[in-house]
Amino acid sequence: MRERVEKALDGIRGMLMADGGNVELVDVSDDGVVKVKLTGSCGCCPMSQMTLKMGIEKALKKEVPEVKEVVSV
Image (cartoon, rainbow, N blue to C red; front, side, top):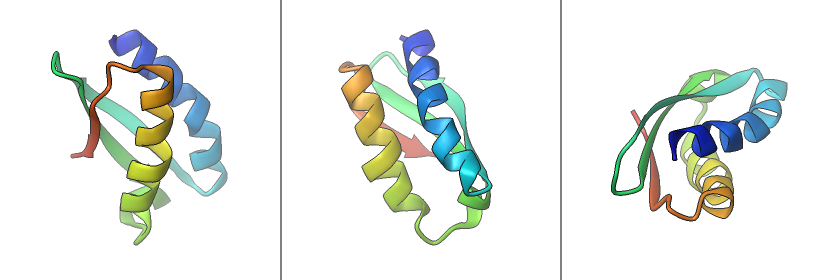
């Protein structure tokens, strides 16, 4: 599942990089929780939680249905 999550994140990175940010995959648990770290301008952006939940989590759940939640660490 980790490889599928990484591939899905690759599809999101272009959008984040356009705004000076990025996302780093930290862990994928067996129960479907994906831990990521927002870096660059995304790491300190006040809208980062919305990006995390409405952007990254939504895209990951679409591409990898086993994903239950995405959390920032």
